[in-house]
Length: 103
Image 1 (cartoon, rainbow, N blue to C red):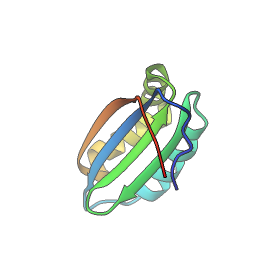
Image 2 (cartoon, rainbow, N blue to C red):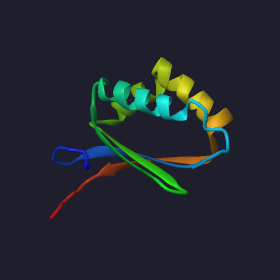
Image 3 (cartoon, rainbow, N blue to C red):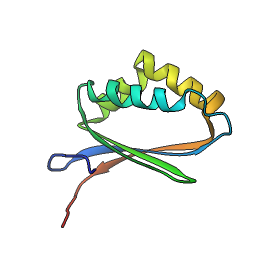
Image 4 (cartoon, helix red, strand yellow):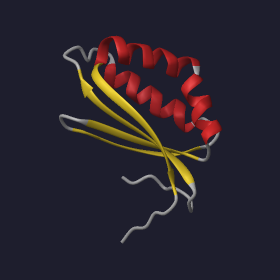
């Protein structure tokens, strides 16, 4: 399902990842992170797909909201596990959405 985002501008955090062989606990943490992010001020929605390359795009009202989410204590724990255990590689990009449209 597509995130229900407002009229631009807003921000997108694009998280691309390759999984390691050790994914124990990953699904539970991913579900927890979506639930926690949705409770954060400035959170607008999320879209995710995973095949060989996983891509998750979260949408935020402003850069301050993104910064607060990055620093959230439970999110910091998930980041640590991601770097040390779940991902063989990842990249984060932050972009300002200036236009969106659909069918």
